Length: 95
Image 1 (tube, helix red, strand yellow):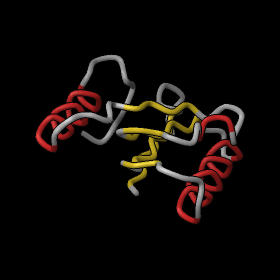
Image 2 (tube, one colour):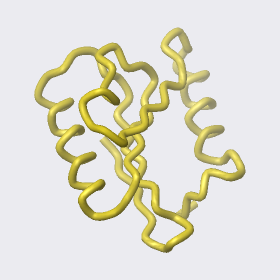
Image 3 (tube, one colour):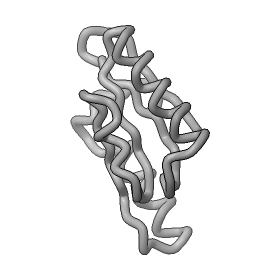
């Protein structure tokens, strides 16, 4: 799991990368807890994954989930992930 937050007024989103959300278990509970803590600190949590089979966004109001695609090969997943982070208008720092 990777976490990237920015604290300026222009950058208030916190991206949590967890590649495969298959069932609601231990690590998914940790992601939900992290998203709740991110909200409590005034950031907007966003979970970036390849697929979300449990609807993780329904567990935390205000949590946005972006699924990049389940049926991608490993090179396609890497390209999709890189393209998402480098797309203009994301408001991310640290590149």
